[in-house]
Length: 447
Image (cartoon, rainbow, N blue to C red; front, side, top):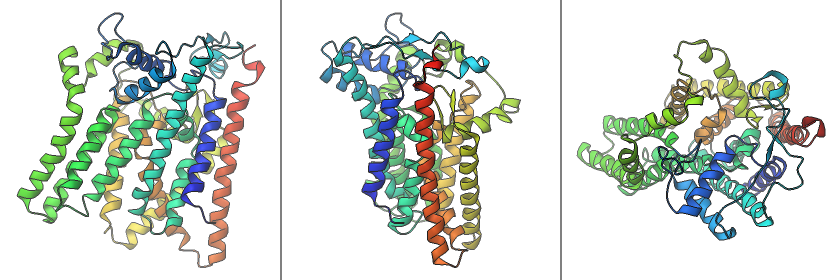
């Protein structure tokens, strides 16, 4: 089954738009706070100060500003008052984290119109469309990462299909948040960093990697996970003597110099306002209701964390209160297991001699480690925290499936298996849309 890049992107656009239109306002995680931040920047033309009453944005005001500046441009273009005004009513049936009353919509979407004006409705959905556009740009660029791991456009298309049919990825891509810009810039940074292995003698790739990293840090601090991997790449290049040590040190300084130059205004502002560059203490002191310190040896990391990370990576919508049927998670678990087994077989056959694979795994582990560190303070086992490396995960799984299928000698059977895989993923997408529709558009959820 041949899949063109245009067909895959068109499919994703349609899938994401289903979520954008079917999921009611404010039901994606933290969408209200992200919208408030966009409105704040659009109206005041400055960033919030989380320690100043009347100058803060509850929930998300600590975030780097790049996405919110883009969103503010949409606000200022479409809204006469530079603000999307919306007033949904809380669902009286919903109780936070309390048994069956948790598994209903947070807001009562029975009001005829929760937007102040038609302009506000237009502005709201324009911001959701901005997210879809950023996700599409991310997907278009992912092909470059796929080409580093799998040969041929067919396998790159299969890797991309894994991403575009991932229900949670489409759900997040259709909501107002800074994830989609951060994920796009993460993909750019990861590809450029891995390309350094091929061209360590040129300065331009190092400068471009620094630029992508700097912009990424202005989108979300999550992208700090890329820094250790880049440092290891530089050390590896030095060890392999692929360039003179002096020249390599200069190019490494160029990379981090550009990244620092681009991102430093935000971090210097943090230091001047909060007394720290990253704003970690400020976040803890302004999000006290969410702070739940725990140790790495706690039962949380043995039980709920790995399970919730997986299920919410596949599809657990809303505020993780809209689960998919268990069978869906079982299918995805089986596909991941097959891909992982195939990847191990590939590495065994190559005697481990594939630097791209090892560095891809390194970046994935670094991203996962970042999620673990975050969860030492906050209990948020959300699979979307791994979407910055979704391209690497898809590429390595595709490489694993390719290796596993090569053990089947019949070309006809191989094609049948691939066709079954594509049709299964599409069927699960249709199921996810049905789950969302039933959850949010059934009257019994509100009565």
